[in-house]
Amino acid sequence: MSRTICLNSDIGELPGETGRALDRAILDVVSRCSIACGGHAGDEDSMRATLKAAKARGVVAGAHPSYPDKKNFGRISVSLSPEDLEASLRQQVRTLSSLARLQGVVLDHLKPHGALYNDSAKDAGLAQIVVRIAHQNRIRAVIGPPNSVLRKVALEAGLDFVAEGFADRQYSSDGSLVPRAEPGSVLTSVQEQVAQVLHISEEGCVTTRDGSMISLPVETICLHGDTAGAIQSALGIREALQTRKIEIKAHLPQ
Image (tube, rainbow, N blue to C red):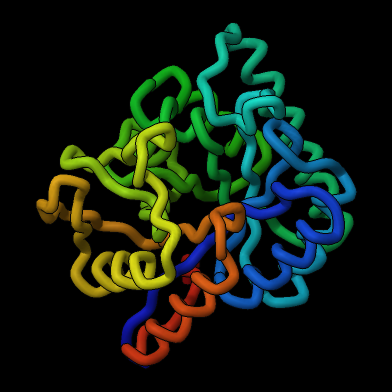
């Protein structure tokens, strides 16, 4: 295979054995995962289980902290002082980091979740908090949107940045994601997701909500485990990539 793409998924977000089974199935497909560490979802049991499952499959693991808001699954912006937000994120990532060390897993990246992902992509102050948390935990890379403030801040701080696109989210013409509250913002059919992944991985572009085509230069594509039909979509995406001779592989420094 001469071409590669990294697929990633946010895991450890759904409760109980049903959630762990879904995580394991997704981990059979992806090359990176971001593990919920208590802000929007997850607890120490789910963290241990997902770390173990990722290690067993050779999937690169990272931290997935968020605004501390389980009620809204971290998907709305929360008004906290910078100090309180940083303290929460520090605790979330330190908990996961400690559990990872016990299992011999090195956390390779940090990816903010939900509203924090969107907010830190535009707000330099929030981006700096995210980057500091990564530095403090000796995490080498940050995942986020291409051409974002978060990318600029991470690179200026000496971290690697992994630009990300989405298999199951509709894009606006300015390159932002269509808000989840809007109809059609989440692509639920396997066919739609496969088409979007192939466009991004082969052409570096994506079709937006208004039908225009925009550039989307990314190194990894996210498959959301909590989207309806996630396993079927993941398997369909893997099959389509294999058919096109595109290898699913995490991009790590040599």
